[in-house]
Length: 550
Ligand code: F6P
Picture 1 (cartoon, rainbow, N blue to C red):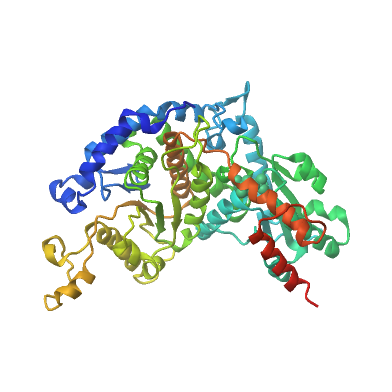
Picture 2 (cartoon, rainbow, N blue to C red):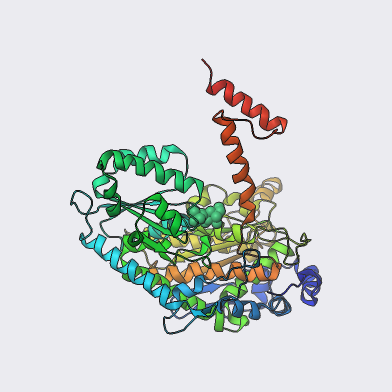
């Protein structure tokens, strides 16, 4: 990866100047002047996905300069490097090859002199074989009964992706009950133990490192409870599986080789659903649908890799995000799926984006003087409309939004879906164009009455000019979901390249983990390891006085 300070590029300087011209331009004017704006600013992936970027505060000139920024930062070269397995995760000396996991088997990918595709396909075959066995009822529990329940034990990327996708693809679900345990909070296990039957449950310990505290402690507790019920350690072989790159640790835990599904160091945790980390997905919806998810992601990979930047959807979305983040200084980006099945999608993208691009040191090792990754948040529509949309419409902050919806519902009842989508279309319109009594001709939905006093009219004005992207696809199916997830992955990649940061490490999660280990010793009264600051000390004292009160 190159080392270029983005703020020193010609494009960045031009964008700064251009921002002066653009900051007061209203979307109303941009649309009024250009009747082809939608046509020119919307992009398709076959008949699968439409992405409309026309409701952004951009002109053709804005895009031209943003595209020159991509050029100045050598984005094309970075994309080639990622796909070809160059070790672009420099702080961990690793390649970044989640794209290989959905690659066509016949396109070799060479890493350290070896083609990694045969190994990937061997694991895929194993996923296929095992998931079929469980779904068909051939895989039996220790007492000879068929498996009815799957529990995925994992956290972060080893939980968010599989749980988001199994929820999103509920319409494709089979009879297996898939549960997720992530938090170390014993409340999760307390309730799980009440409902599962160990004789018919399998446990997937999903941890790339097999050292993550939450996952390993939860897995150990489950193992103990299992032994108590099953009475014999050898029964573990029918019930415990590991998905990990740390096969030795998995074996130490007691998992036999046949029950280990391998992943590799070149798969980032938050990019791992395409690997065996997606085993719970294959179990939930069948291998064929899991493969369709990979196929959708592969189609987006080919689009990202081979399409000129002028029409490259992840590149354009990444650049537009930078326009708001680094020139308008908007701090956050919101994601609003108008589909109940996608209700965990914002949380999933929150991890992949914020853990990737939440960095303050550039590729030179210098503290950055520009903004890096935005705060990502969101909620399913229309629920959000009755919560925080007030601030989106009339607050003082500029919050660029992505509105995502399927045209067809899996569960059409009367006209619910039409009502849902009416809201979806209405919101992007209202955000962009607003409503002003004083400029009423721009608005055809005026409920501002001329009888309102001038004072009241002020409260009923909507300034508009609030940007959004609209992403419309036909239906939530495995293929479209794969397309959508990979689109966001590549958007994040694009932004990381331009921020000149390393997007594929996550050192920022380490400090809290280390301190928590030391505090654990204090809480369990083993010893005082550190002289804490007086706030932490005061809190610990209060904890102790309540916890150990007679
Ligand atoms: O929170 C840090 C992190 O390393 C994430 O990147 C990762 O997804 C999660 O923990 C779980 O890690 P593992 O799969 O190794 O248990």
